[in-house]
Length: 151
Image (cartoon, rainbow, N blue to C red; front, side):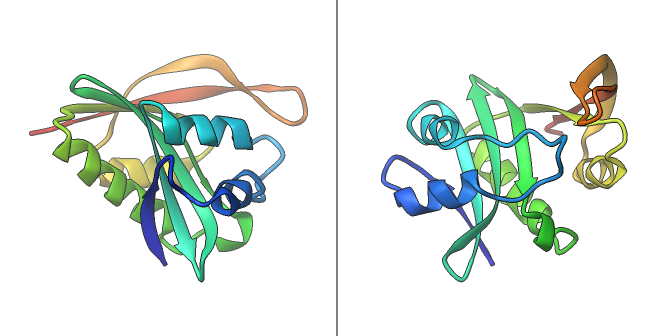
């Protein structure tokens, strides 16, 4: 598996693959138009690729010396293999090379695996958004806000 930042020259097939990754019912997935926009704009689209197939993606946006991670998605059948960590590692290196000093994200309160991944990277909880996420059953879930700051 390798991670690669996708840009405007990327294969359209990879964007289609990313948009079709399987996920849980209450996980928001980005569509082709949103992913293409990330490739062409100020966002960063990092993809995890196995055997020329996209198996995960991470989208981050940079403004001056700050960034926000908008979404991280790994195909359901490939979770638990370090793919999200690899994408986060590659993204954080790229952002730091661009002078980013702080990175923000939000994560479902129930997603303890993701929270542990982010905490291991140095992200710290800084608050929450009440009833931020909508679940498949119509209920609402809090988002935990996390921040990473360079030393």
